[in-house]
Image (tube, rainbow, N blue to C red; front, side):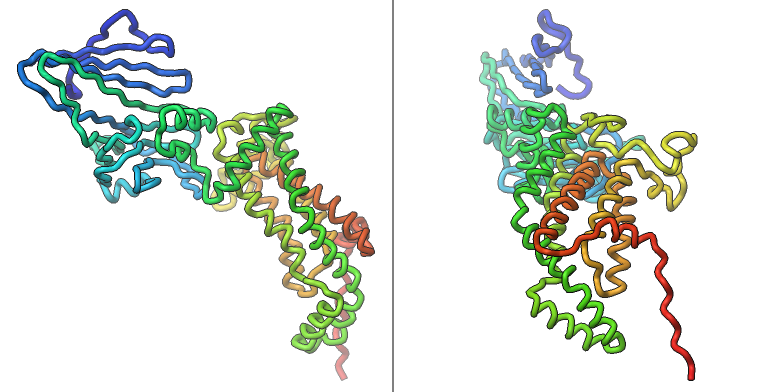
Length: 459
């Protein structure tokens, strides 16, 4: 059969459902009758059973094949978080991921004498053709321009033919998945059908060893709390508890830094015209007081992989899609829908369409809350002695606020809650180590105009 073959429905079922498979029939008029029975389950795994009846006088060898065709180039996020496009797991070739532009350049990419599966993956959905486990295949990724659209295909031909003896009927079975990338569903198919590493249909990213356990933890907490937003908050508490020993040492060092602030200022004043001597005196002070000036960075640095893993989970997980929190957050996988640049909807315009700066003009309530909590946390830390470093630290909350304005709301809520817990934790640890923590005074000082330094008098 080819694209011009006219198939007829055989049997009673004419509508394909999970309960009613549909069988199509085609007779080539030369002794071969082909039947294809399509069955589908509730998660859109299709089982395709092909039956060939040979009424001729000689044996016939046929090579089973399957393909997925995508007409036109879809819009993809084109972001390093997740792969979107042609991909598959092909035996010893492992995971093969191709961009649409890759296929346009290469036109054809072959992998002969292999095993596995291949197809197309979108952000939340995927389509893949899958032979039975351990079946030898020749796999092909291909592209051509038809004149009206780009045609992308992922296909395979089995390396061993199906031989239909004269007077006999032979059946062959393969599969097609065309559904949502739900972790539990994909894992169940991998176990039940022994599909090779079908779990890679979901791109867990470089930090998969953190990302996947993070997803399982969030799912577990969701089962208890009934809200993915609350699950994110609970995960934050667990992460803070796990890293408490490191944070305790870090904040203790910062408390020591705050205790020696008067001596540091005295050194800066005494040696303001001799920077090398000033740095040397600072290092001696740190050594004497057993202070590591970089220790305050560790709580932030150690959280970056966790932050990135959580971002990946929120970004790719179908569970987060349209998952509500409270109030105006009805989709944790989407940015905060409010915008201070429209006065939260009072001004009927979309500032994000402006050229160049438009992408920076979406700033919701939760990103602002996140920025404020980050700024308050900065005010707990002793100011860096270097003016350039101090300026960078002062601008960091502003930069992060605008940067996270277009991030998923679930991630921004996590960051704001994490900052709040950090402020509380840091305050009590530093107080316990004898540091004077005047958080309110530090905040008020930020709004005071600093006096200008007096110019030297001329003689």
